[in-house]
Length: 208
Image (tube, rainbow, N blue to C red; front, side, top):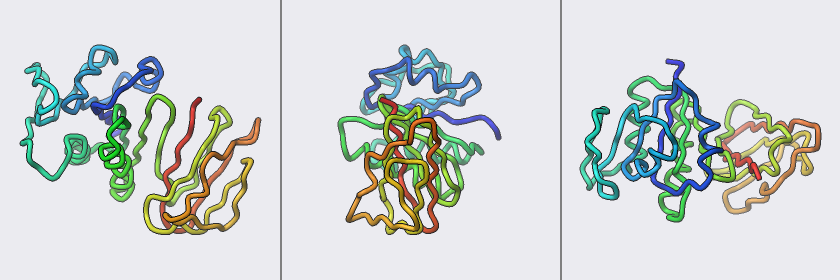
């Protein structure tokens, strides 16, 4: 399946125009519970609605809707991801998942690790940045991004190499206890390149 799955959570979105520019006409869009508050502003119809509807009223649209129990292990967003994987999607974009509640924000960021472990491509975008996991394949970062950061959110990342950036690394490691890969800059006119031998890193690209 070549279509991308877009999952819409209930965290605030302030720059709808920037988010809409990231969407594609053929995206399969899942609105999760209070993510439905973004329906009108995003101007994108749902392909599927998922939720326990504890934070937003069930709109009872003709769209396929999966009603979940309030007491469950998975968040509505995590359930939506698993359901989309079950339906065969390989690429995911998550929006409205970075917000004021740190517990939900961290849980949603870790969904990127879940997707990476499942061999899927996952990206989170918010009003300021784009996030993805770097693991087996090198990642290139064009100079249109103001800053980029590498954050270890899983074990010890080794064999890290950064090229064409203000702060270079060669065969380095970043542990969870010491996060020194924050706020790097792509050299003007260059494309930074990040690779890793062992482990995984969260790449955060700042659009400001």
